[in-house]
Image (cartoon, rainbow, N blue to C red; front, side, top):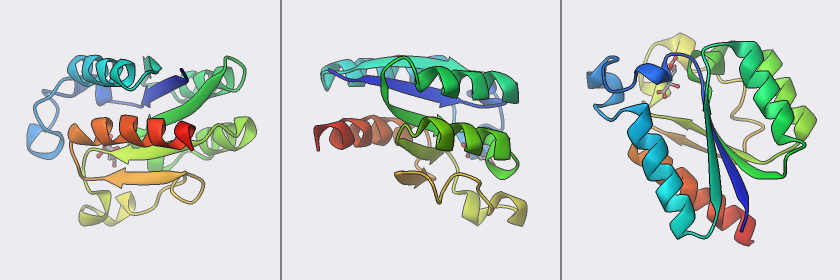
Length: 146
Ligand code: DQA
C-alpha cells in the first residue's frame, strides 16, 4: 500500500461549469471520488488537495515530502506556465510526479506551451480530459510497483 496525492491548482474547483468545451463536464468532486476509488482498487490510498493559492500548493508539496507520499499527480492549472516556486518545491521534496492537463496545452495558445514542470516530471499526460486522472492513478501504481 502506497500513499498517493492528487493536487489540482487554480480554477480546477470550477470543473464541470468552467469552459466545458475545453475541460469537459466532469466536476472535480467526481474526478476526486473516481480517482480515490481506483487508487483503492489498485491497493493504494489517495489524498486530494485543490487550491487557488500558489503558497498553499507549495505548502502541500512541502508536506508531501514529510508525510510519506510516494507519488503525486499534479495538475498545476495556470501555474504550469508561471510558477518557479511550485517547481522548486517539487525539486526540494523529490517526490516523483505525473504532470497532468485535461486539455492538450500544445494545441492551444502559445503561452500554454511552456511548462515549468514537464522536464522534472516522471511523465506527462496532456489532453485526455477527466480520463487522464484514471491514467495517472494507473501510472502512479505502476511507478511504485517497479
Ligand atoms: C490546464 C491547462 C492550463 O493551461 C490552464 O491554465 C488550466 C487547466 C488543463 O488541465 O488543461 O487551468 O492545466
